Figure 1: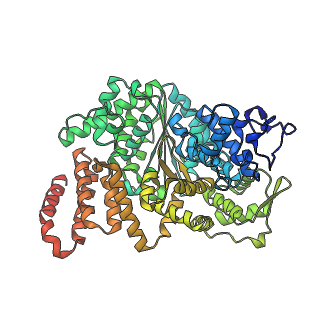
Figure 2: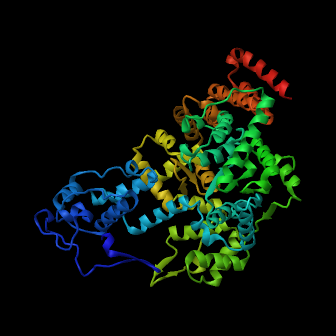
Length: 611
C-alpha cells in the first residue's frame, strides 16, 4: 500500500495495484530485489520474511499518515538504508516536525509504526472508530452529530440566518433551552460546523466552578488566543488583554509580552474589567467574525452572566453570533440568567427556542440515520416508547445494542434482534453504565479517575493520578475515543466527556474511600501543574480538598477564592466563598479551632462589609 495505489473518487478512496504485487512470506528482502515493492512502506516483519497479517497493512497505513500529516516520510535514503531504519530506528516525533498535530493522533501514528505487529491496532475498524472520535473533536462535533439533527430544522435555519446577519456586523444572540439529553449541545456544535465560521469559540459552564469569576469568558478568551499568532496582536489588543491577566488563567504564560496593569479599588476594577473585555471583543471580532458557543449556562458564574448581559447592549454593532444553552430545570426565577432572559425578550437580535423530545416519526428518522437503513417499525416503537424520544437516551440504547452484540452486520445490512430478546435499560444513566461496564477494567478505572477531575480533564493531571506511562494512558483514551465517551479539545492536552451524564455515571461508580483518595491526588496534581499561580484555580482546588477531607488546605484556597472574587468586585461570588470559609471553619477539629480564630474574625468582617 502506497500513495500511487490510492485514488480518491466521488464514492470514497479506492485501492488499486493488486495485480502488481503481493504479501510474500519467508523471503528476507534485505538480500532480494524489491521489484514491485517500495521500501518506504514495508513493515519490519515483511522485510525479514516473517508471517504477515492485517497488521502489516496497518504499518503501511502508518507511513501514509506520517507522510500526509507530517510532510516527509518517517525514514529516507536508499532502499537498504530505509529498510534498516524500519527494522531498528524509531520514527522522528510527528509533533516535533508539525506541532499542530494532535498528540492523540501522534500516538495513533506511532502505534501503527510499532516494530512489533502485536503492539499495533487490532483492526482497521478500531482505527476508523478512533479517527471518527478525533474528527468529531476537531470539528466541534459537527459532522459526528449530523445524523442526530432530526426535528431541528427550524432552529438550524434560525442559527444560519443569524450567522449571516452577524457576518454583516449585526450581532445576534440565541438561547437554546431544553431538558438533559435533549440535544442542545449537539445542535449548536452541528450549527457551528455548518456555518464554517472563521472563529469558533467555546465556553463551558461547570458545576464545580460556578463561583469562579468570569470563568465562561476566560475560556472563550483562552480559546481565541490559541487560534492566533502572537505577532498578529495589535498594541490595542495587548492593552485590553493586560487588564484581564488577573482573571484569565495563564494569560501571561501564554503571552509573556502582555504585562498586567496596576490594580484599582474593587468597584473601579470591575468597571475597567467589563469595559476592557467588551472593547476586546469588539476589536477582535472586527477582523474575523466570531461564533461563540456558551454551553450549560445554568452552571455559569454570575460575573460571566453579568458580562454577557452587558455585552448584549453592544452586540447589534459587533460581528458576533452568541449561542447559549441551558436546562430550565436548573434555573430558578431569582437566578441571574432568568434576569437576562426577561430583559432580552423584546430585542430584535435575540431568539429563544426550547427543544422538545422527538416524535415517533422523528425517532424513526433518527434510527434510520444512525443505521443507514430502514429500521423495523416495531423496534422503532419500542425504543421511542422506552426513551420518551430523548435523543441522548436513544443514542446510548443504539450503542449499547452494538456493544451487546444484539445487532449484526451481514450481507451489507444490519440484522436486528426479535423484540422479546431486548432488555432495554430503564433510563439514560443505566444505558451509560452498561456501556462503561463493557470496557476492560483498567480502562474503566482510568475513566473514573478522569471523572474525578471533572467534565473536562487535563492529560497531565490524569498521568499524575494513575502513575501509568503516557502510552498506556493514551491506549485507554483510544478506547474511550472509539466509543465516543470522550473527545479531545483541539490544540490542547485537554479532554472532555462527550456528555455530562457519562462523567456523572463514572463518578457515581466510585466508592467513598477511593473517591477521597482520588480527590487528594487530583488536588495535588493540579497544584503542581499550576505553580506558581494556583490562585487562578482556587475554586476547583477548594472543591477537591473538601472532597478529599483536607479541610485546612480547603480553607487556604477558599480564602484565596473569596479575596480574588472581591478584588474584581464579584460580590456574590466573594460572599459565597466567605460563607464557604465559615462552613469549613465550623467543620475543623474543635481542638484546633483557636488557631483559626483570627481567620474567622477577618472573614466575618469581610462578609459584613460586602453585605
